[in-house]
Length: 299
Image (cartoon, rainbow, N blue to C red; front, side, top):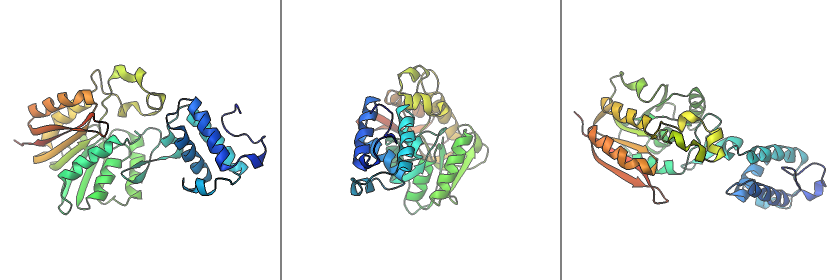
């Protein structure tokens, strides 16, 4: 079958859950999708509005024409390399399904390590005030708030779309009383508040401008450029964070950032020069340098 999804002209009896999954997986593989079977299952579960595990209990069931029509549209979108997370509207992060959409960076597994680094620095039963730069979907701030019930977080982002989606995630996970979202660039919204924070976390834009042509279409075409690119060396936003952070951090506060492996040693040098101590690098699950953390010495 050459069309980009099971067509209504075929015998309805033939289009079982199993056959649609097999057909879709083959089609997505032809389109260069990395995990075609998994994505076929996620798309069909979304089309049928059911848990993914339900597909296996319904393996021999005939899929209705209305659900097949929805599936055709979903598969067409994915074949054009629209990210799966935008199509289904969610991405799992730290065991929670966060809303995502066009205009918001899709959470990555590596960022869960950034959260782990922060949680190691935040006591479970003591009040701490944390600031996040670039909240995007809100996944970092929400996760920290859920994992550390005494924690208060102020998060900034320049994107109105991020504010829209993150606000819904904050409400969805019932942390609105402890997570404050502010619109603004880097730390500008909190610089003159007089508030001092116990920690700063950020997954900033860090892709070099000349790397755009090397990225997969899902990233280069669909994800927001303001959340991805940061100048010739990818460190424009990191420099601003490091420059502004001493004005809003308490002595002994931590700073943690997710970066490209090639940037980590440079960021360590920046932090040391800016008055941070014990700057170090954490590796991700693939063994790549990924997270830079440090402690602010204070004035």
